[in-house]
Image 1 (cartoon, rainbow, N blue to C red):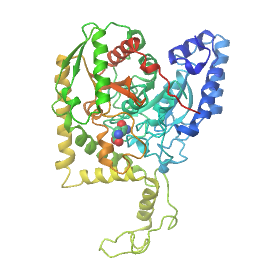
Image 2: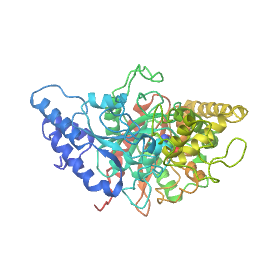
Image 3: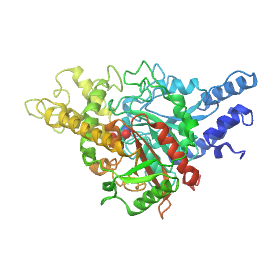
Length: 516
Ligand code: GLN
């Protein structure tokens, strides 16, 4: 076993801490030092809890020395997306709206990580309120892709993906509403699992689109994701959408042979728009699965091409409702009375009768003015766009044409999956149409950014699970991702198939040539 903790898998770290070959303190220090050296370049962490992490690690070491029981993640450094509430650390959702916010409680997933004796090293950067696919919507600056720092890591869990890819932590927690675990995992060359809707409690996850949001693990390998999922999954009476099904022992089911496994391939995935290098990598991954004994069959998802318009109605509708709470009174940034962000006379808000009004006259009351100014100052442009899109689509007269219709199409997309899973066990394909794109390339074109999610949103709309993992590299040295999707609650199959793939390939072991 190499002595450098940065080279160890999560499974190896917890085994080494348990056996005494590695102290949790030495391990935590190694990752904290790596964070200190790389975060200036990558901006993957919004806050690092050096003191708290070391205290936690020394507690694990003391308990081991005393022969007391240790949790299943004892001594494992973990980065947590800043969308999850932490009572001892700020939780900003990468928004000015929540800058400096300290939640009164831990998210259920954070509480479970702590109970499992994991060492939370800090909070990872993300797109503001998880809205985005490049991490460029963070109010605290973009994250750089460790494979090429001029490129985006993907999003919205870009900080979590970059943190694992750059060895700043062996495991990170992400959330996935339309692809935010799988797409950044794919673009950063790591493994990321979006569990079935309801498999992991969302209590304490800052809500974006509540019927789609799901928390999951991001790590180098399926085995490390399995270890983490075991600790965070399971029923939580505090989340009414959480499933009551028992949590399987995922780690024990990884090495089942894939003989006879039927994997679906959707011909439409390979239509125009898919980068040829990505297509080649994905086809080669199917060949690896054949070598492992699986068979590959064409399947149809006839309504999948409606995924983007359906998602980009439902998600903004739910967001506009969820984000109503940030009004400067109940939650969030509060504008100074009459100060700061005053609209210029003539250019500012228009009064109801249409005449130009100065900032004060434009508001019907000081309270409304405070709400408006707080939201105008606190939210970034993409979040405002989503709130406006969602509010419009939910408004009287448009609700049936947009929101209700999107819900009906969502049912069709879900039915497509149910039909496809009658004849195959898993569906394979690309995670995104291209490898990591340059920072700034899509920021001026929201539609181009939304289209990045075309292969991932359908799993969220259907509520099923999906995993993404590296299946090759472009000629320019960028990772290519492969996605597997499974019927509800088939996480063990997703992890098993990915682990078998990773037993024959070493793409997931490659490290970015990061100069720091
Ligand atoms: N990129 C998608 C969006 O912007 C997905 C985000 C997510 O999964 N949180 O909505």
